[in-house]
Structure formats: structure tokens, C-alpha cells
Image (cartoon, rainbow over all chains, first blue to last red; front, side, top):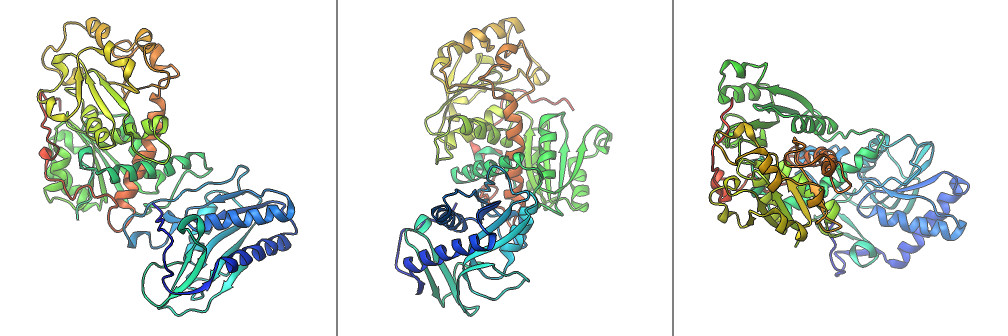
Length: 192
Length: 338
């Protein structure tokens, strides 16, 4: 079950506030449209949990610019993770593929933080069991570096140089009551 | 660490809700072009069936295969079990073959418990029905089916829902597991049957009982009909089949007294014309076929939660201390029909 903590004090140094997050998502929406030359065949798939509200927000901005609702869904990657066996069995998140599917579409995967790249690898595998998109792009709110796989993002809200000891936390109004990206030196919940 | 599912009574409310929630995600797989997930790739699941079964064995096989596990089917007929091999030797053989999970159906109540706790093997044991004792995955799929029809959105419980379990409760592992699980999920259970077919000590089950089906039907949300298990009966429990049918069978007339939203369930196999008439079994209210579909999803959820990670996601097994954990003991004759 997704943790839904009440809004609390930032766990570390704030690097993006709600205004920064909003501007980054608006820019990403424009970049997606520019790259795709419009909304044709576009499908946004968020990776649970925080990729899903981000995908919805990007879709809302696309709709505001183009006047067209693009299909939004979610893609759970839990069972495709390469570290599935290394931790206790994890709760599954919803997978919700929009009507019309993803065959022949341009799928934009949306996630909060790009770190090792392993989540995205799992997402690519999960997607191949759902259909065959014409192209797959990746949009992330934060790219914190330290890739362990040859994966890069097409649309990035903010490049955030970090050390491996640091933790990046993304909190969103939908799940956490507040929009904020923060960075702390302590160990804790990992993102990636 | 223990990693078994032996009794529906071992599941906490959080566990049961986690299984139902996970089953919901598994069910959505049926709409996808590729009905397979990689979660149990390289794991071996053995279906060890000492008693005949169609639905349960196929259901577990489909569930394990959809999760990419390797499945070995092992039934008493056609194996060395029919030559007199003991449960222990069978278990040691499975261990030597590297089974990660053993799904066991046995005519003796308590056999899965012995398999899990005797120290013969390290694999997970899932009880697929033992004698007249328990059938936890059936109870989970029944609860899942009820929840999909009658559940409150946003909750995985069945709080306040009224469930009537009707018929041969005495010999029914389905009734016992359902009574335990439904209570955990907050439903109110009424067991209905002739006095001879209600277990001795049913008072300790913390459920209501009734001998009169007609008085129970109008207030219930779910009617679950049970098969009369002739094969386990070595005494007379009712005068004639006809009389049983008249008093405890669900026919069109009785179904008409149900509330509009009420559903009719049956764990199968059905004896049409005895505990349920054909028109009821095939009616709009009947969710019997859906129960089978849901069975695969629920068993996928159970196998995933027990085997998917480095350790099980369910607390079950930690508290397992024996058949008496649940406060229930098997009463009445057991079917020693091996």
C-alpha cells in the first residue's frame, strides 16, 4: 500500500519547490509535444507510485496547450524488477493500460527520479508484455545520475548532481500533500 | 522462516486484504495479450494431489504457470504413492528435486501441516484442501468474489455483509475456512443445515447456525451452497436425497426470496438437482463460473506473496502452531477413502 504521509517538514535541503515542479512539468509537456510534433499517437504511462500523478499533470498541460486529451495510464514494474528476489515480496501497484493499448503508439514513460536506471529497464520489459509501441521515450522530474545501465531520459525536469550517500525525496501533492523535491545526506528510502 | 499457507485462520486481516488486493491486480492480467508475468521464473511448484480434484489442481497449475514457475503435477494415481510410499518419503523426494513450493491436497486432515512442520523439506506448503479440515485458497477466492460484488470501494473488507453457508457443513473444509476468513474480514456468517450435518462444537466457531434455510435467505447478501459429500459419509445423515433437497436445496422459489443484490455461490463440484437446481446455478445471481476465474487470480496472489521475494509477505506461518490454533478440531468421520 502506498505510504501517504501527511505534509511534514522537509527531510533535507529543498532543491525544487511547488513552483519549480510546476514549471518543470510545463516545460516537459511542451518538449514532448515539440519532439512528437503534436499529440498524434501519444500515450503517457506513469510508473507507480509517483510517476502516475506526474503523468496526469503532464497530460493536463498537454490538453491545455493542444486541446486534446492524451491517454494516460500506469505501468507497475514490481514483478519485472531484477532485485525482486532480494527483498520480501512487494505489494503490487495498479497497472492500467489506456483503451486503445500501446501498439504502434509513442509511449512516454513518466517517473519521479531517474537513478540507477533499473526501474526503467524493468518498465521496458513490462511494456513488452503489454504491446509493441512505435517508440518509447522517458520523462523524469529529477535525474540524479549514477546510472548502472545504458539508459537516459529524453525529458528531464531537473538534473541534480548527487553523491551516492545522498537521498533524493520527491513529494507530490497527490500522495504527500505537498510538491517538493529535497535532498538529504542521511540514508533512507531509495528512489530510482 | 516459515512460509506456508495452511489455514485461513492464520491470516490476519492485513494479510487477507493484501491477498485480495494483489489478486485484483492479477485478475487484470486476463485482459492483456500476454497473460504471463516473470515473478516466479526459475521456481518450481509441485502440485501434490492425494485426492481427486479438477478445479483446484488446474487452477493452481494455471496460476503457477502464469507467474512463469515450473510446475510438476504429482497425483496419487499413477505414482509410487499408489504402491504405498509414505508421505515422508514423497516429501523427501520432492525436496531432493528442489521444489520451492508444494501445493498439497490430501484426504487426511492435517497432512499439509505435517508436511510443513515435520522438517522433511524446506519448501513452502500451500494447503489445497485437507480432509474435512481446511481449504484456505478456496476461502480466499470466495472472499475475493464477494468483495468484487459486495465490497465497499476503498476497503478490502466485507464488514457487516451477511453470508449463509448452506448444506453439508460437517464434511466441508470450504465451510470451515470460509467461516474463519470471513470473520477476519468482518462478515457475519450463518451456517445452515440439518442438525446432523453441523459439526459438534460449532458453538466455538463464533458463527450463527440455523436449521431453517427459508428464514435465513431474505436477510442474507451471499448464499454459498455446499455439496453433500457422500464419499465421506459412513453413516446416515438424512433420510433421503429428496427430503434433503426439499429442505436445504436452493431452487427458483427460494432464490426469489433473496434481496436484489444477493449472489449465489458454490465451490464446486455441483450436484445439480440436489443442493442447487439447474435454473439457479445458471441464473444471473450465480457467480459460480466467476469463482473459477477468480480462483486463478487468488492463487497467483498467494504464490507470488509466498515465493516472489526473499521472504513471504504474509505473516502467516509465523503463528502456526497446529490444527488447534484455530480453536477448531475436526469432528465427525473423516473420509479415509484412500
